[in-house]
Length: 218
Image (cartoon, rainbow, N blue to C red):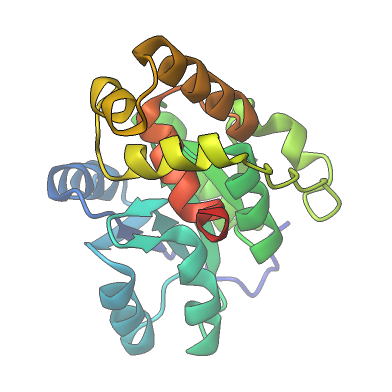
């Protein structure tokens, strides 16, 4: 419930952080058509911290994968400079483990880019008003984010580590098989075991999760 002293006619001031120029420009322009939303945008956490230190925002719309930066780097840095507003992660994909980490850090919602623009506007209003928003695929995490159990870090065996290192280098299955002097079908089997251990479905997701969460095991 909004206190009577709150200027209810003031637009929600949001900052969109996304490294894809076409996406952020298009979304910011479309959202700004709503008179109750005022949206600025930038490409990196570094740029965002500068903007946040210069003016006030109610809400940050934060992409998870920002090239060399990750969403988990944002909140500690933002709190350090005094940002006390809300954070809605807007991303194409994030693992359950990383989603739990972000929720524990204090983000107020996760919205997947597959959603419609009108739904994003609704998520912004909900989060800005003090609520939370979780995409349906993360519904179970919203029951008690702070108490949600962390996924145990996979204990990779030596062969899995070898294959995963080569995957991170960008080698194909055939190249990995040649390097390790094993069959290509064996490489595929090892990759499937890595998919199952890390909870991903594609090679690209495996690379991202390995870099973000299991680099110390490589």
